[in-house]
Length: 320
Ligand code: TXA
Ligand code: MG
Image (cartoon, rainbow, N blue to C red; front, side, top):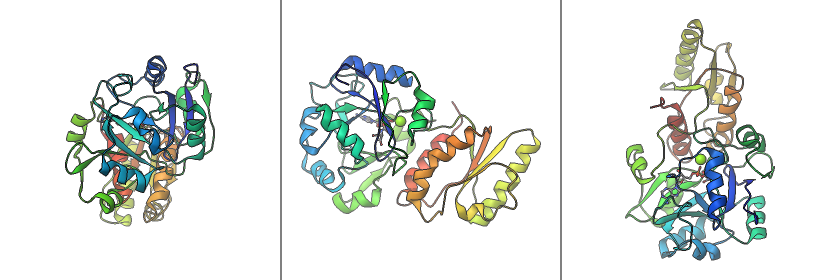
């Protein structure tokens, strides 16, 4: 890292692809390795609240309260950018996205380096985020100097990105810290509709987190109803020659009559953290099965369900 290298490391959310945030060339290498457009800004990881001043020009009281409540943890705050930070990191924007990760390996790495690490998720641009070191290897073999392997990441879904420049604050990307948790600390927090989010985060593509197989979301009023629609769709697609896989909560899996196709059980729909942990693994497992269509369904839209549904909806959008 001191010589401008790239290190993939575990965080509590997903694996990150890190470089010294103050080394513009190393930061450019991140974009090249991921195939990421230069107009999509990176998250800067710091070891503690005390280091925020290295990358942000201001750390307002509201942001400090959130940092005290949720750091280290899966919350990314947009703050005014420090003029010394290379423009590549923030894609020329005047805000910087900052967080303190909760994973001991990430914290150990940050402390050992002594400088902030710019790190996006360690996947090829647009692909499903990596929750294991093997996922990083699948996407970035040969493009990264070191991969620190600490097994599966405990949260499994990326951090919440919160814009504090507006009143009320706006969630640009739902993630590991829920809207309800944020509201308990700072009051009303808005959740931007996908169209607004695209405008606020330049470079965010509508289709993202996408497996290489097509993802189709199946609606239904109950697990039994979803299971019935899934079975019907699966049969229709199979008779049209498509290779189908199913990704569903246990309650739905239990209602499927002798599933004829690869099935990935996400766990109970009442255990949103369990689903968040297994979601990206499920998408990658089915795409590697390999299948060419994955049928999945949304979960109740509260708590972590907001982030789970966001990833499913964005992975399911047709390429445009
Ligand atoms: O959990 C996570 O956040 C993981 C781990 C590695 O920390 N990182 C991650 O980074 O998901 P990435 O680059 O895949 O996603 C960062 C998101 C992008 O959607 C980006 O557009 C947005 O944050 N972002 C970064 N800086 C921003 C800024 N200044 N203004 C608006 N959006 C920003
Ligand atoms: Mg990403």
